[in-house]
Image (cartoon, rainbow, N blue to C red; front, side, top):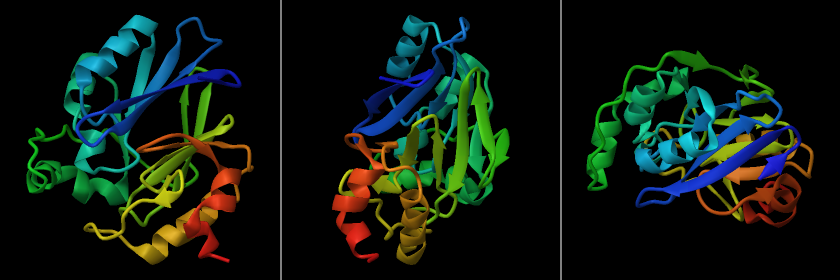
Length: 215
């Protein structure tokens, strides 16, 4: 799908159908872009990247639950780009193999992150410009990525729902505050969540029952 001068593609990967999102530059002939939440099926992700001719500049994890980071080792090995997370997510990131085992899955240990991001930081690749919004609640270092008419929300906000807060590091009060941050974005902003279909901020503020609980 195109949005302004960028294009994005959502690939639902793995047994939990986590959304891996690719965002890249439409104007730059080099087609520079980023991979967000490569959770599984590295071959599927790399096949799309190679078929589109995208020059990947970074791997960004909205949070470090295993279904969103499981393919990080393979994608980093094949692209050589930095892995980027929020500093408050490091404990979960380092424990991903144990997380996966609790669910009956096997995930290899992850490479050390190359860069930490925080609220207000900018992530760029070609003409792609995304601003980091720290949105704890589903996990301590969860982030959303906003810019150019879209917001990639990880497991903070879904169509009609929000991320669970009963996992380690979850906090219902914090995720409700994070929802308030997202509600301040323009209503036409396209929401690309970590699972399930896309929506808009306006639709979620109007129809999502968790936003109604804020009133």
